[in-house]
Image 1 (tube, rainbow, N blue to C red):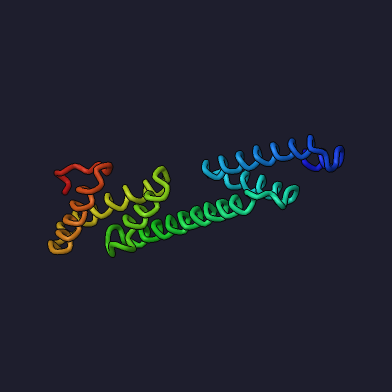
Image 2: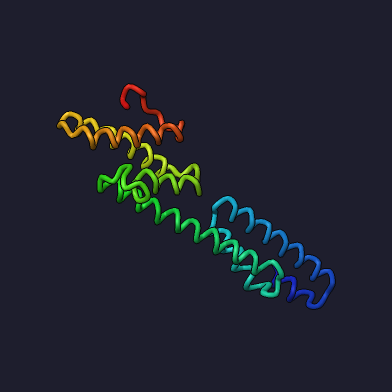
Length: 168
């Protein structure tokens, strides 16, 4: 539309006014898409603005916002993959900073509704409890106690995780 307006009425105040409105609407849609997480659609709109209105004053801010959101999504995806690997490796709640629980918790601070991270967090606590039960049955009471204490602390600060007190 911008290209058509420039071709039909070059240097006209009417065309410039309409082009300005189109830029603002496109930028507004791109901002909404970035906030909603529809980065592919936002990238398309930002590229169109860059192609047809490279001198648009908001283009730099939109580009930076898009890059920032893309970096955040990449960080979330990387951290979820690490959390899943920690879960598969049996690092359910320890070592704490690199455990499946803490990694998934980090993701949930950035993306509270991330389904895979929620699942990993729940599974890490459940598997830790199963592991502790096995250690108790095997007579490894110190190891089991450490896990039970850690799970108890986790549940004290994360009320959304449902585990019965009897299990702990």
